Length: 154
Image 1 (cartoon, rainbow, N blue to C red):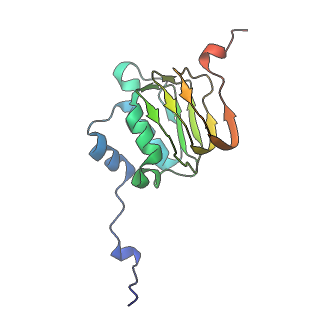
Image 2 (image 1 turned 180 degrees about the vertical axis):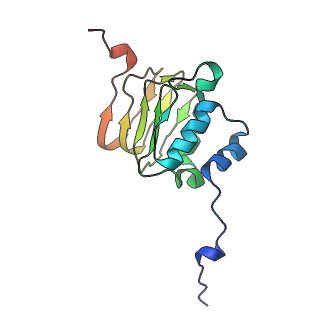
Image 3 (image 1 turned 90 degrees about the vertical axis):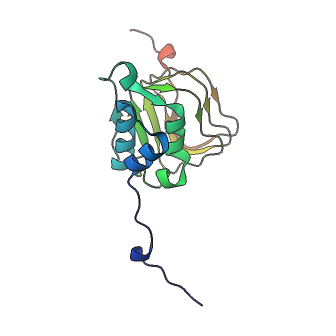
């Protein structure tokens, strides 16, 4: 017996901001910006935020990249954040991202795990990171790892 499903037969897609709040309850302003930007194909500019409003949990960052329902709503422009503080471990081990990952002028206070991951591109320009594990990482197009500590005043 063949059963056909149409769009009307499937459950409606829960918008990404609602998915995020159902998973993480309260979001900081930076987290709200990141989730909305990922869904809209824009960059989450957090550089004007301060204190707790500027913080993004590493678990939320990882979830956005790896959760099937969440990542399905990230546009082809990928995850893009500027000027945020990323708190806690960012675990993307064995993740396969089909869109770019950009975190410019961000501060990561814990390890970024990219072991066995497959990324389209990775841009951490002017970011400070605690450390990175990236054995067997595959990056298809390009990588920028000029961290804040490597930049010199000219």
